[in-house]
Image (cartoon, rainbow, N blue to C red; front, side, top):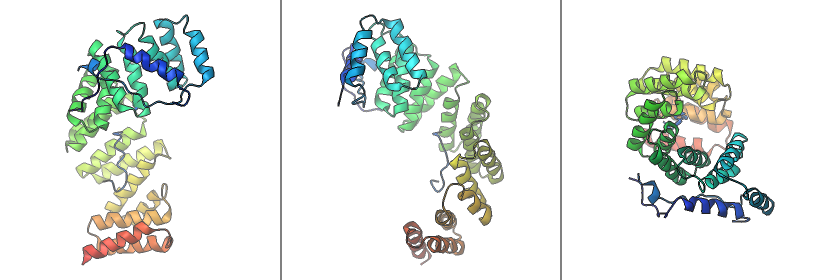
Length: 321
């Protein structure tokens, strides 16, 4: 259950928030990247944006002049335009401004939730999504956004419910499918996880994150060769996608292919870190002689820097004794 949040008396509080934002001068996958070695009562909730100093005197004056003739439609149009341009602060201001004229439009709340979620402001984003869903319980994008926030904040049961409802309304929502895959992986249901990732890939067939996540699910299920093929495919889709290279190194190490593991790691890491990572994998898999070898190589490659390799070596000594 989420913790209590101070109440607001009406949606007009959102408009007041926007006005304060405008006047301020000095005053948002999982992605399960498998990083290496890391193994509705909306009206009772207050939106408290973490925003300061967004508008200077000049922009505030422009807003004052424009606001003399603004209405719900023009506020939404301006907000949409700013959002398309990537100006989230201005877009947020106008979406909130639009609520002064029409507080019954779920799309407005959904967009406010989207912007806050992208900024990492999960509390106001969740409030906005809940408001959207109170007006339209089948708003697929609000369900997806809410579910992803719940997933990121550890509310797995709620996230599963929200994301399942989102996909039931719109099967093309790949982020929701990916989120359901992450939940299934966490629960050890790798068959179900693979189905969710494949559903996401039907919408985004060339997205490295999804290919990587499907590979990670296969890795968790014990299918190392299948995982390796998918990690390789993800890196070919994007040669700078670090997780795919790190995961290739992990699988190659598990398969005993040391040279291939080091080569994969060094697409992302320096030589000393690559050796240290390989040593760590071997330490965790009870391959003590190999772990000693690669920790020593890491230290030799960077004797004054590689504190972590020394710590791992000391840990290995302690385990060995």
